[in-house]
Length: 275
Ligand code: ADP
Image (cartoon, rainbow, N blue to C red):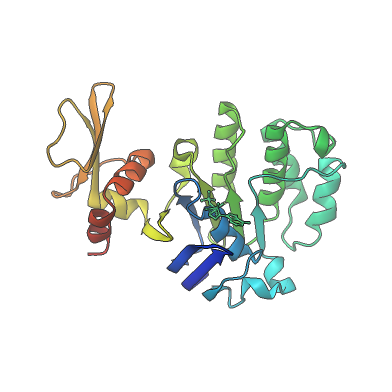
């Protein structure tokens, strides 16, 4: 479990995160959403111990990330959005660095490389951006760490690779594992996330399970625009819309519509979810 209390962080000239309080549980794949520059990468770096909080605390299994203790480091892996590719074969990289992680599963690494269609004997720096990305993700998933942080993993991937990525992340989740995936390309990975966290204006605007979202909000495509819609946009067959679920109707959560509805109704959403 990742416990974050009253977290504050800013770069030299401006505050990025303030008063962040949340608990991220095992067995979940969290979707960390937010507009560009809102602080998603910064939060992942704080959780992984690459940055030190100005105030507040982060605790993972009783350990503080910035302590950089071996016990902490072997249980967490952070895949940044961009990666400096070394001049060695991917499988050599995996074997050399995998030894630091007690649950590293080399057979699973090869299986994922096969799924992604990348040769493990290729040199990292000779691969395309998308192939490098898939190789790092295959390595990261095969480490089987308790915490896995993926920063914009679908960036630079083609459409078939995005669905392979969804499948691989979903298969790698487990009851002892917390996966956090940041993305601003909500559609790419939307059926993967539960819960969903939306960052906005230095804080957490929404942190809710898909079950809670569908209990409180109603997603529909209808011929006419609902007068009470929180958010609405033209779609095939009428208007795709999000409204408050007043009569316990069931609907499938559309994460992109949710994202737009939340950003268009910040205060209303806070009151709906904090009731
Ligand atoms: P996101 O991942 O949501 O796009 P980031 O966490 O990368 O956002 O950035 C949050 C804010 O912090 C942005 O305004 C960005 O310009 C700023 N920022 C990020 N990294 C640095 C840095 N190393 N030094 C100064 N400001 C930074």
